[in-house]
Image (tube, rainbow, N blue to C red):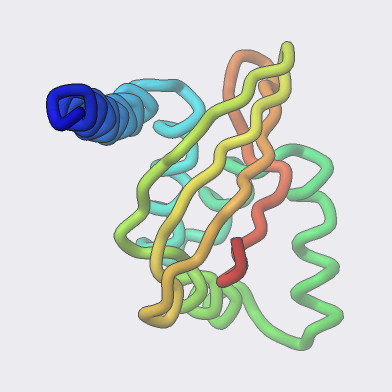
Length: 141
């Protein structure tokens, strides 16, 4: 009786170790994708405070409405970028990528305000470049 239990526990332990290693490997592989590279480039524009470059990383429809949203909120580009920087996730890890033709959805985890958040980043391929349509972050799974 002890041998089957030991074998069973060994198999379960091996599966858990392998699945963790696979998940870590998958996360590293996602870093090589065009979608993750585009999103990381977008975050660099936020860090730099470059509003015009940020708009270029957004989907055309999204970028069109950004100026009006900022105007309606009564904030200028500099303050808008400061807000985006404060709300941008740190310790970012991508967990999945779903492709559907010229559309993609990235799932990620990161910290916002020091708290673990779960993100969904919707993207679209416009003229061979991946751009962000919208992103949402929440502290609830």
